[in-house]
Image (cartoon, rainbow, N blue to C red; front, top):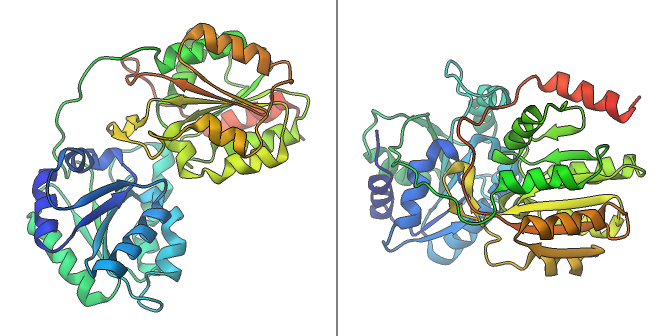
Length: 371
């Protein structure tokens, strides 16, 4: 395996002075090493992958040094626009190294939501005219320096496609401080009407909701679990609230996911659906991919929500406060409502992963009475 700190030093030796991206669980060892690195370079956790590419472009404009942009391969969708219309050799020709985690690599066991993306990743990069080198645990660390040289010679981005198990990962720390996300979601289910429709963001949130339903002996018919499409739970909840105006819709969101497509807050504020409550499980980190800080860690999310047109917003840190705010939101007099729920890190042991996505969708559509 490759030590993340060794890769970082090699990249700095080749002239990299900026690392920017969105954390990925497959590259947890690299991302965590960035968090503790004290070298010459800067590290920016971006709101989304497209913004990371643009930040790298601006840095190259100012310094002439290629940056490293890291992401999961699912993030290529967010990055396609700037990669094709900004950094491409056919436009500005801006060199950078894309460090892309290869979830769903063909022939490697992974979750169902990664399989399609994994199968098309090489084709996507080829279509974008981005040279690719596949990196695995047995490769020499000099591959990172070589990538910087190729980016400069290419007058555009090059990609290192990182296989599962490439980077060494240290053991996670234990312990949860304060209200847990699991406890907060139990409170949400207890406080809101049984006919509430739920949209749960990707990562631990949706998985914990599925486990809660199982423990409570309840069906999944009212729940849409976002196993991908990070950052889009609130937009789906908006569409659901507009389409079902007489039903309360609860978006179980996360701070990292909100940051990724924060413009949706403005869309919700503009539409003002009174039947929408957005519960943001805010632990200030990208927990499910290693605990790297999120872009919203210093943002007053409630002030932001109110400024774009939400009817109400509040920070809560106890189950009692959360239940009280939810009961008010359920009356339809305080929506759209955003609750910034301060939770600690940590999840339950043996957390299962959801499956049967098509069946879940069919069951929810039937429950909603959709045609």
